[in-house]
Length: 132
Image 1 (tube, rainbow, N blue to C red):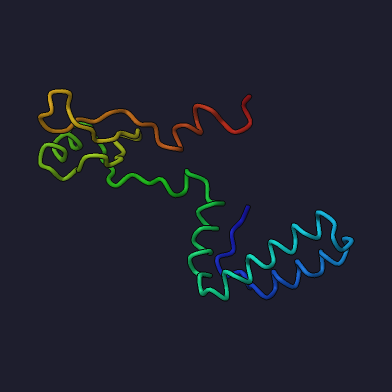
Image 2 (cartoon, rainbow, N blue to C red):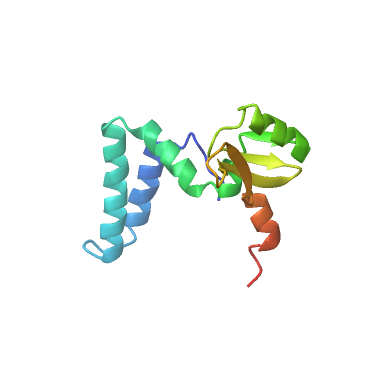
């Protein structure tokens, strides 16, 4: 689904009204459309439209588009140096030579280490959406 971040609330409400005219008053469809329309109207009246737009964007944005590594390293050596110097913090997701890793505490509690953590694009390659 393509997301339009500048959707016109009045236009959406007009379309909901037009669609609702096709259903008998009191039907399940009538109720669902009214609930949706009033919810959108409420969001606008409560001055929460910007927050709703962001929520809507996140809801329809695939993880592959918003899970982004905090840093990208060409080599493991480069990443290890950055980790040792404290430039990578605990919990950070990084990309090393095209693969995802998360910085986690070492088992002995002394510093951090990288744990393989596939990035969304890696998961998509392993399990394409059309595979079953």
